[in-house]
Image 1 (cartoon, rainbow, N blue to C red):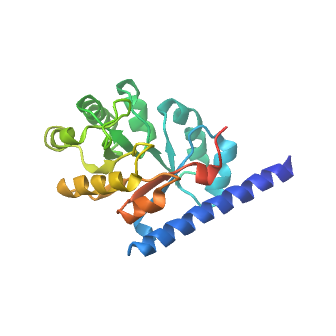
Image 2 (image 1 turned 90 degrees about the vertical axis):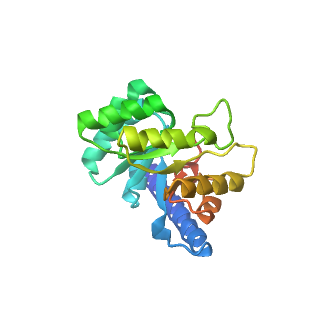
Length: 229
């Protein structure tokens, strides 16, 4: 059993190092500093036994898709490793906003007025202000979360002018069957139009492309943790 754990530690560290090297190479090719790109290690569905080797290899920023799953595993991990940052990268239901504000340092999936209002109320109540990104449904897919591009302006105005929410940037998940570069370029254009510098885009299969289009946050799971069961 001890040997198996050691193998897991080594492979996690090696995978993380490989991803970091590719981020550095992609940033250099784009004329950017790798320090301008935050790597979010997406640990959804993985338990502490898989996460701890990645933490011990030096990773400090993690992403989860579900509030309830994060609530079950991260408080204990953060007690042990208090310098970790946790990002919510999955859809947020309004009835989970209280836990989300309490748990997460950043929320990437603000996508409708109701969520913005509930988050503003919870942030005021708790005195916590997670970094916020607005998720844009760049492919306008009916089954996918995210504000439609045409509705982005009004949602940002609501957040900024009425609710007093600071929005750090935009997030997108390109359609699976389309060229991601098109969507990354579109998101970067929308961000520039609205005076936003943060771009949360790019996952295991396309984060190097996203960096070329200015990604400031890349969300990488399987390339670090291995395939999900």
